[in-house]
Image (cartoon, rainbow, N blue to C red; front, side, top):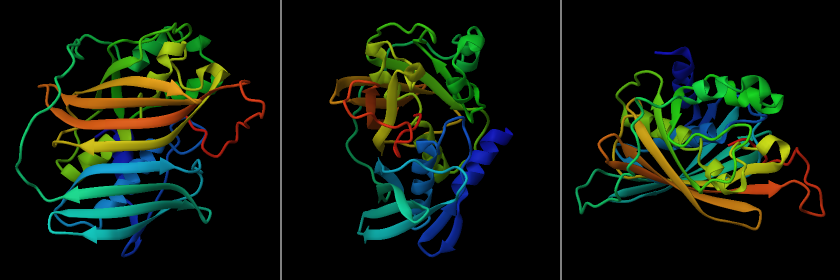
Length: 303
């Protein structure tokens, strides 16, 4: 297994401090604060530790403050309900005595039922597409330094965009995005782990879809816009393996009030829909408000 992927899996295991209290560390992925997908995945992992033989089918989360990478994060789990078929958990992530994030997750025992799903988009497969690293290499020397580390940091997942943007001149594009994603090596056969890893990677690429119609295809837009995820919702429909190629299809039906809304669907290679995602985030053009917003805004982060 690749060290970067192995390290992420280690981060998701968490340290149990008490029956319902866990602690996790963070890793620098090139952003100025803890990556939101990491907190979502660790919070889901904490909730999973308190549920027996039930699988997550949904999670709903809010980002409250940006995380400090130099300090551990404590996850407190509230066992809200254990019913005949469903279990609900509430998780609060805490740093420096203050909540930075909260999550509610619902788990269900395995059941059979009615089946239907949306159709997978008709897009090229990943085999002949360039990954993000290859696409960036052409203009790497021209990318602003504040973005270079984030864009070029080693990732535990590979991303192959179907409609790559021009990094330096993205232009105004339709608010749709398709990208193939896959863990860079094999992952142990554990459904709980694969769900956590899917939660982690679901926070990449999504909010950027809201920027595409405005010629701002990179988060922070080279200093022109502030971007911060406000909430994140993920529904798990079917089991999947994150070390097989998955198509992340997203669109953004609305942007207004300095917020962008994006939704996504994640498909297996055979067209099976495995998950749906939704997210709203701040996309504020700098200088449009009378009151200047500081770059130290507690929710400002690269998504």
